[in-house]
Image 1 (tube, one colour):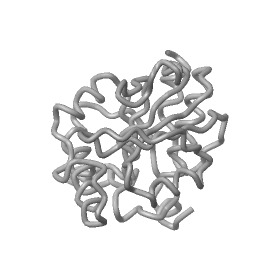
Image 2 (spheres, helix red, strand yellow):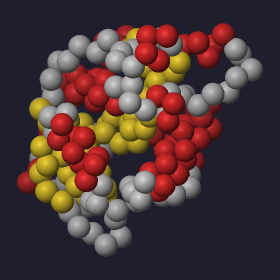
Image 3 (tube, rainbow, N blue to C red):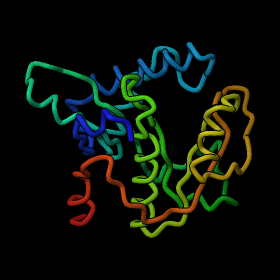
Image 4 (tube, rainbow, N blue to C red):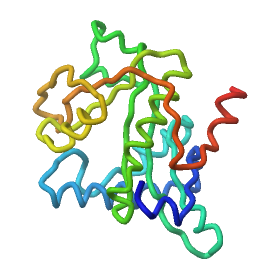
Length: 200
């Protein structure tokens, strides 16, 4: 794990409506970085509030915060990372033969550039897999850009299997991956979602 995660304690929590500006900033920065790499996974200007606010309202968007930011109440820093995890299988990608209800789906996974290479993407995927396992579902699933071989190799290296690529002309994404849900222990951050999941 990168030194950042040792010097800066991190907390995972559900996003709240007040977090929307910070989430949009992080996703815009990530989209710009992707475009600079020649990757067309997301819209260049990021996502509008109409795409992200519903995820917050549905309580399926999660944020990683640097706990040290709370010592400076005037600082409005964006989150360290975001991940959405839900049962919404994109019908253009996941058909009846996939048994769409057999998994949870990762969306909007983004790590702030200063935290790149810190292992937080791996940790969030492990958390998502453990959450899927706790929900009694066998598969953690996601889709990513058809032409982003580097990202596809990243997912393969984390135990995901490429199922197929759905090539739709109006979609940049379409490479479908899944891996078995498992009860992984995650120590990279403090998980504030656990009490909610237990009491739900």
